[in-house]
Amino acid sequence: MTSTRLDLAPDAALKERETGTRRTRLREFQAQLVERMHAASSSPQEQSSRLGVMIGNARWLLNLQEAGEIVTVGAVTPVPLTQDWYIGLTNIRGNLISVVDLARFLGMPSTPIEKESRIVAFAPGLAFNCGLLVSRVMGLRNVAEMSAEPVEGAAPWAAQAYRDRDNQSWTELTLSTIVQDPQFLQVGL
View 1: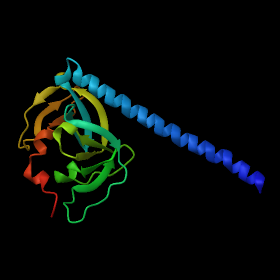
View 2: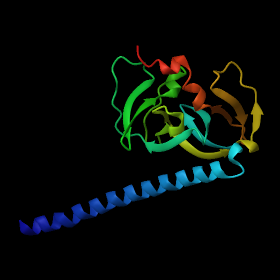
View 3: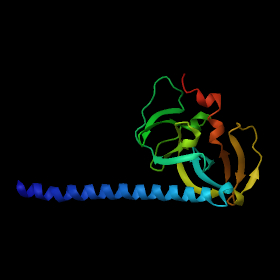
View 4: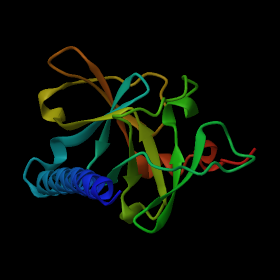
Protein backbone atom coordinates (compact mmCIF):
# COMPACT_ATOMS: atom_id res chain seq x y z
CA MET A 1 0.00 0.00 0.00
CA THR A 2 2.84 2.36 0.75
CA SER A 3 4.34 1.75 -2.70
CA THR A 4 0.99 2.62 -4.33
CA ARG A 5 0.85 5.92 -2.50
CA LEU A 6 4.41 6.69 -3.55
CA ASP A 7 3.51 5.90 -7.16
CA LEU A 8 0.54 8.30 -7.04
CA ALA A 9 2.40 11.13 -5.35
CA PRO A 10 4.76 11.83 -8.29
CA ASP A 11 1.77 11.80 -10.71
CA ALA A 12 -0.12 14.28 -8.56
CA ALA A 13 2.94 16.47 -8.27
CA LEU A 14 3.45 16.33 -12.05
CA LYS A 15 -0.18 17.34 -12.72
CA GLU A 16 0.15 20.20 -10.23
CA ARG A 17 3.33 21.43 -11.96
CA GLU A 18 1.63 21.21 -15.41
CA THR A 19 -1.36 23.20 -14.16
CA GLY A 20 0.95 25.79 -12.65
CA THR A 21 2.93 26.00 -15.90
CA ARG A 22 -0.27 26.56 -17.92
CA ARG A 23 -1.38 29.33 -15.55
CA THR A 24 2.05 30.96 -15.79
CA ARG A 25 1.96 30.85 -19.60
CA LEU A 26 -1.56 32.33 -19.64
CA ARG A 27 -0.48 35.14 -17.30
CA GLU A 28 2.59 35.80 -19.46
CA PHE A 29 0.44 35.93 -22.62
CA GLN A 30 -2.02 38.33 -20.97
CA ALA A 31 0.83 40.51 -19.71
CA GLN A 32 2.39 40.60 -23.19
CA LEU A 33 -0.95 41.54 -24.76
CA VAL A 34 -1.46 44.33 -22.23
CA GLU A 35 2.10 45.58 -22.89
CA ARG A 36 1.47 45.57 -26.64
CA MET A 37 -1.82 47.42 -26.18
CA HIS A 38 -0.14 50.04 -23.97
CA ALA A 39 2.77 50.38 -26.40
CA ALA A 40 0.36 50.81 -29.29
CA SER A 41 -1.69 53.37 -27.39
CA SER A 42 1.41 55.43 -26.53
CA SER A 43 2.99 55.27 -29.98
CA PRO A 44 2.60 57.81 -32.79
CA GLN A 45 0.22 55.37 -34.48
CA GLU A 46 -2.13 55.53 -31.47
CA GLN A 47 -4.93 56.97 -33.58
CA SER A 48 -4.83 54.07 -36.03
CA SER A 49 -4.44 51.03 -33.75
CA ARG A 50 -7.56 49.19 -32.62
CA LEU A 51 -8.21 45.89 -30.88
CA GLY A 52 -9.93 43.52 -33.29
CA VAL A 53 -12.53 41.15 -31.85
CA MET A 54 -15.21 38.82 -33.18
CA ILE A 55 -18.63 39.33 -31.63
CA GLY A 56 -20.92 36.66 -32.96
CA ASN A 57 -19.91 36.43 -36.63
CA ALA A 58 -19.09 40.13 -37.00
CA ARG A 59 -15.70 41.83 -36.79
CA TRP A 60 -15.47 44.79 -34.43
CA LEU A 61 -12.72 47.26 -33.56
CA LEU A 62 -12.29 48.67 -30.05
CA ASN A 63 -10.35 51.81 -29.19
CA LEU A 64 -7.37 50.88 -27.03
CA GLN A 65 -8.17 53.73 -24.63
CA GLU A 66 -11.63 52.26 -23.99
CA ALA A 67 -10.80 48.54 -23.85
CA GLY A 68 -9.56 47.20 -20.55
CA GLU A 69 -8.45 43.79 -19.43
CA ILE A 70 -9.08 40.71 -21.57
CA VAL A 71 -9.84 37.53 -19.63
CA THR A 72 -10.97 34.01 -20.36
CA VAL A 73 -14.61 33.34 -19.64
CA GLY A 74 -14.86 31.90 -16.16
CA ALA A 75 -17.83 31.53 -13.88
CA VAL A 76 -20.60 33.97 -14.77
CA THR A 77 -23.47 34.17 -12.30
CA PRO A 78 -26.83 34.75 -13.98
CA VAL A 79 -29.00 37.55 -12.62
CA PRO A 80 -32.74 36.88 -12.57
CA LEU A 81 -35.23 39.15 -14.34
CA THR A 82 -32.69 40.57 -16.81
CA GLN A 83 -32.60 40.80 -20.59
CA ASP A 84 -31.45 37.68 -22.46
CA TRP A 85 -28.35 39.54 -23.70
CA TYR A 86 -27.26 40.29 -20.12
CA ILE A 87 -25.22 37.17 -19.30
CA GLY A 88 -24.67 38.00 -15.62
CA LEU A 89 -21.86 38.94 -13.25
CA THR A 90 -18.29 37.73 -13.08
CA ASN A 91 -15.37 38.50 -10.80
CA ILE A 92 -12.30 39.97 -12.49
CA ARG A 93 -9.49 40.52 -10.00
CA GLY A 94 -11.89 41.30 -7.15
CA ASN A 95 -14.23 43.53 -9.18
CA LEU A 96 -17.77 42.51 -10.10
CA ILE A 97 -18.22 43.02 -13.82
CA SER A 98 -21.48 42.83 -15.78
CA VAL A 99 -21.12 40.63 -18.85
CA VAL A 100 -23.06 41.52 -22.00
CA ASP A 101 -23.48 39.45 -25.14
CA LEU A 102 -23.47 42.25 -27.72
CA ALA A 103 -24.41 39.86 -30.53
CA ARG A 104 -27.61 38.97 -28.68
CA PHE A 105 -28.17 42.66 -27.83
CA LEU A 106 -28.13 43.33 -31.59
CA GLY A 107 -30.72 40.60 -32.22
CA MET A 108 -28.29 37.97 -33.49
CA PRO A 109 -27.93 34.45 -32.04
CA SER A 110 -26.26 34.18 -28.64
CA THR A 111 -22.47 33.96 -28.61
CA PRO A 112 -21.46 30.44 -27.61
CA ILE A 113 -18.87 30.24 -24.85
CA GLU A 114 -16.01 28.25 -26.33
CA LYS A 115 -12.27 27.83 -25.89
CA GLU A 116 -11.41 31.09 -27.70
CA SER A 117 -14.19 33.15 -26.07
CA ARG A 118 -13.07 36.06 -23.93
CA ILE A 119 -14.50 38.89 -21.88
CA VAL A 120 -13.16 42.32 -22.81
CA ALA A 121 -13.69 44.60 -19.83
CA PHE A 122 -14.34 48.29 -20.33
CA ALA A 123 -11.39 50.51 -19.39
CA PRO A 124 -11.47 51.85 -15.81
CA GLY A 125 -11.56 55.40 -17.22
CA LEU A 126 -15.12 54.78 -18.46
CA ALA A 127 -16.22 54.14 -14.84
CA PHE A 128 -18.61 51.45 -16.04
CA ASN A 129 -18.05 47.94 -14.64
CA CYS A 130 -18.94 45.99 -17.73
CA GLY A 131 -17.38 43.59 -20.17
CA LEU A 132 -18.36 42.27 -23.57
CA LEU A 133 -18.46 38.57 -24.37
CA VAL A 134 -16.48 38.12 -27.58
CA SER A 135 -16.11 34.99 -29.71
CA ARG A 136 -12.39 35.62 -29.99
CA VAL A 137 -9.74 38.32 -29.80
CA MET A 138 -8.07 38.90 -33.16
CA GLY A 139 -5.25 41.20 -32.06
CA LEU A 140 -4.32 44.73 -33.03
CA ARG A 141 -5.54 46.17 -36.32
CA ASN A 142 -4.32 49.30 -38.07
CA VAL A 143 -7.27 51.26 -39.47
CA ALA A 144 -4.86 53.42 -41.47
CA GLU A 145 -4.36 50.36 -43.68
CA MET A 146 -8.12 49.94 -44.19
CA SER A 147 -10.58 51.82 -46.34
CA ALA A 148 -13.36 53.71 -44.58
CA GLU A 149 -16.92 52.95 -45.59
CA PRO A 150 -20.19 54.66 -44.73
CA VAL A 151 -22.08 53.34 -41.73
CA GLU A 152 -25.68 52.91 -42.80
CA GLY A 153 -28.53 52.75 -40.30
CA ALA A 154 -26.23 51.92 -37.43
CA ALA A 155 -26.48 52.92 -33.80
CA PRO A 156 -24.46 55.99 -32.73
CA TRP A 157 -21.92 53.77 -30.97
CA ALA A 158 -21.09 52.02 -34.26
CA ALA A 159 -18.72 54.86 -35.15
CA GLN A 160 -17.15 53.85 -38.45
CA ALA A 161 -17.08 50.94 -40.87
CA TYR A 162 -13.90 49.74 -42.56
CA ARG A 163 -12.82 47.19 -45.15
CA ASP A 164 -9.41 45.57 -44.79
CA ARG A 165 -7.02 44.28 -47.47
CA ASP A 166 -8.69 40.85 -47.33
CA ASN A 167 -12.06 42.51 -48.13
CA GLN A 168 -13.34 41.78 -44.61
CA SER A 169 -15.73 44.27 -43.06
CA TRP A 170 -15.01 45.78 -39.62
CA THR A 171 -17.13 48.13 -37.50
CA GLU A 172 -15.64 50.40 -34.86
CA LEU A 173 -17.48 50.16 -31.56
CA THR A 174 -17.27 53.23 -29.34
CA LEU A 175 -17.62 51.96 -25.77
CA SER A 176 -17.88 55.47 -24.32
CA THR A 177 -21.01 56.02 -26.44
CA ILE A 178 -22.67 52.64 -25.87
CA VAL A 179 -22.61 53.22 -22.10
CA GLN A 180 -24.93 56.18 -22.73
CA ASP A 181 -27.43 54.16 -24.80
CA PRO A 182 -30.67 53.86 -22.74
CA GLN A 183 -31.42 50.41 -24.22
CA PHE A 184 -27.95 49.14 -23.26
CA LEU A 185 -28.39 50.51 -19.74
CA GLN A 186 -31.80 48.82 -19.27
CA VAL A 187 -30.76 45.29 -18.32
CA GLY A 188 -33.86 44.58 -16.21
CA LEU A 189 -37.06 43.15 -17.65
